[in-house]
Length: 439
Image (cartoon, rainbow, N blue to C red; front, side):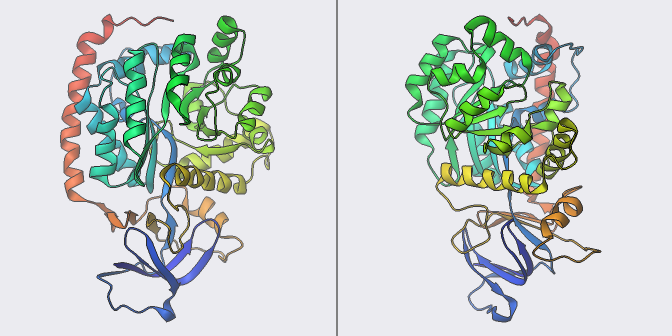
């Protein structure tokens, strides 16, 4: 057993000062320091009035994108599809299983250092079979965090092999640390035949799919099928309460009604949307319709607090309303992430209470205005989230980051990741220019 003492505990619902937490893989006891007894506790860590939060959930990421950092390729896109062709589709074409593992390890560790202890990843590579096991090994076995994984089924790849990679992973991973979703890339890379095959293999699993990230996705769907993207997915009964529809930056109000009807989740990724110049999701309308939003980073940046800030500020700009989306809306999206993960992994997560998993972070905070249970989220949002760097990160009761230092053995793996990234870049430089992708 371990104990954190002299804590300020905050889990978006409750705030407690001068507290302790006793835990192993789950939280065993919390209470006031006046009642703390140290007998039978192996390790006592005095956090000296740090605030203790549940570890963050990243609602959508692409871990393989870590190897794009610093890479130089010919790049002059005019449209979103050209961004895919000139960069991302070249990358995923040459990613092999070793590259997949090390990109997941390095990106996962980077996100852990910013307080994330559960990742919902969306993978793509031409090396399909076994790729999700590589990511699970990196995140769950070696880093020691939790993961929901999916492979991007697409007509760009071997469709049957992609479907089986999702199916096998879902069937073989039903633990409190790892589970699977049925990955799909985007409507414009999915034929009717592919969607039929997915439908017959879904078996109640949720899909994880890019939806109307660009308006071109909607235009393609209307041109070729006479339906919007969400209508098309709904026709195949692919949307359910376990599904994540990513981006939805260009969906119609009718499509949002379909999402709500099926109780699916929408993962917004506004920083990536701004970077790709594809537009912003109508967060206020989603909120008004009671749609469950979660927040991801799309593999672009590693800090979930930065994504929370950007979601808040961009929604004000888009709606031209400085109170168009409140910080309570952000809080609700954070809690939705815990709800989704808790159901998929069959765990209690996201609160610091007895019986919940011991996934949390600690961070010092020296407030200069009064802090209490009524206003603490305002302090967290405006005072802590900018530049958020936790002192300690704990997942499943184990310290991954302690006193700002990550596990040394994990850090040493980054040297191998650098070699794998260099190997990928050389292959792309040598062979990438000859690749041609269909519209």
